[in-house]
Image (cartoon, rainbow, N blue to C red; front, side, top):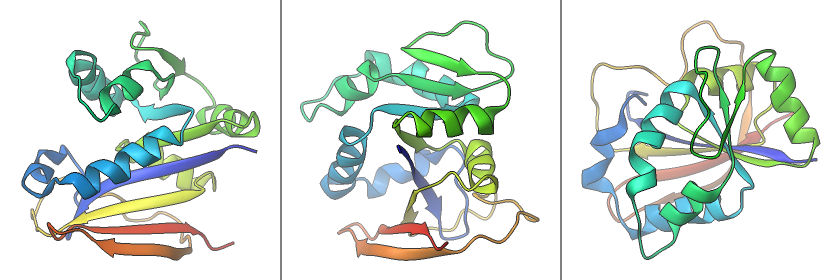
Length: 178
């Protein structure tokens, strides 16, 4: 059985939208954490908006650590009902997203999700998340899209690890409490 790992950046007030606000806090600890997650994954699983943002930025990037090379080369599965032209090593999941993603997981795929708030809510709804990593940045934005909307069903998680980076970002790792 494969697994689905989610890595999400949030503010203290739960905002996850357009995380350009992470730049002042970015450091080698966060970069290593993300490279380790990416290196342990077979493929990316993204929502349409995150895919479009990443596909516009990452193909032109390069770095000494190998993150850019890895993210550019790895397969991507994109949950979308509107995109028609697959680029950047992508395959589209158009219908029955929860079922198709569950099948990828059964096929022993190790899928990493970045951003993709709507997709994460769908994964949570269908109990498809195996690990949830929240990187909580020490600021309050006061507005923006929140990680979880009101009205979702209660889900319990167990904290498996927590650490604070030198820049004050708290990295909390959870698994479902089944």
